[in-house]
Image 1 (cartoon, one colour):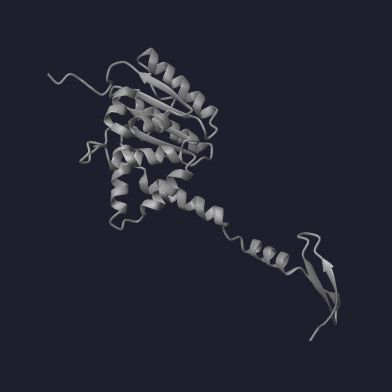
Image 2 (cartoon, rainbow, N blue to C red):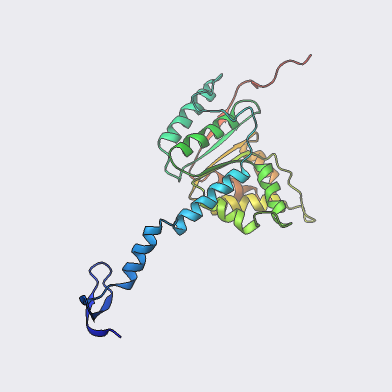
Length: 251
């Protein structure tokens, strides 16, 4: 058995370790630092690395993009109205100055390029190293419903992932069906949207909608003012005008 002959303070972590008399002389080492160096040598992912990887997998699992916008970019957006030109300029600035805190609300009739701009911003933000998710409001609610029947993600996991995103884009707010309860007050769907906007009130969000602010308030009933208040917190609101670029005369 080696004989302890003294103690020494680790210059790295400040822990005290014992010194022993050995055939090679007086020796000792800080176990904590030796263990840490060994772990580093294995090049194992950190807890934060694993969390980030799970978040990226979540985005892949949840994102569903239609073919008409999958190649969208901010530069490829073709304005056909002065409000659309202004929206494009705002999108360019939003990407350039992204800080993870400011939000956008893009409203207007169908076919004016709201989804194009929203998804284009997501792609540009990702290129800057941030984690962003684009999802339709109806698809998000469908995913939550599936979580109640033992899907891959639980409701708690979905909300946790959503909260951790650098940027959340919910497209087509208002398209979801909102069912009233017996008291005439909107229930589950509006409760979910309120919870999401409440947990992300100081984080970056982009919402698109065909509705006006007052129309959304009426749609969501008692939750309406609270949802709108949080959805527009620290947000730049843009209202697009013009003609539906998807529509062609059928007769």
